[in-house]
Image (cartoon, rainbow, N blue to C red; front, side, top):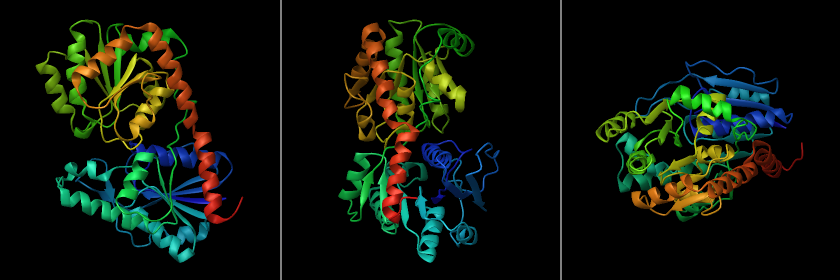
Length: 388
């Protein structure tokens, strides 16, 4: 099968949509399908080692200063010539922006089925562009629905986002298909020595460690986690808190740490990729998140694949991954007292911690790249009426 993937974000950019687009493209190519990814130009180092079945095509773009790392172009059919030459059986767009409209143009002209994936509750991110108003939220939903009405099928990574589309008036076919992860890369630590070495190098001591990973912005609610950590620290002097990722909220969080005198026990590791990212998760004893805006939350799933118990606020897509009392604990509010109690229970109960760790890995394996992309392939076959 020939598959054309359109996305406004793709590695080397670091975010959930870019990772999902890459993982699905790579797995489809490894299965033997011909895959072309059409995305925006990026001045950063390009990907290598993609294999013969996967090729990246880019269109000119400029930085969009309203949001870090976001790039923009005007959908003028830049991709049409190359798309026509490639002659895809199906087109799949991961974003409803410029490249998404490029995919709409291509699908209409070439008369090829168009599958759309929507990954995010956009209305939760309007504060970044100073549009956090009720009317703007309504307009954002109208725009998103209008765009995906151009598709033959809409995919969402979670049931919660699927439900939101229906509630906001979406009438066409919609399927919840979870995001895939590389469970061969994200796996439990294989030896205590590696874990100890990284702790000594990055943290400076061998105490228990909480880990949070993701984009560090206001909607992730990391400040609550730092307050929780401060409470836990009162009774566990060797406790560490590792924060992996970058984002606009880091300066404020560092000020908060200074105010609470936590500079020597809260570690901002920045962006980590590949093996380094896995090792940054593996040093943890508990993965923590207080975000209430997650569509699916790849970071939680990647931590689970590494065998970490999870304590999270049970909102949106997170509650579809973390099973309360099975692989972690869910708090249904961001009450710092409740979060503190739940984390403390895991840290001081080795039997419970081991049970949660094993169950996290077991659940994560259901979302392996191969399993999810095999389901995606069947969806492509359904919309094209083929079995190529």
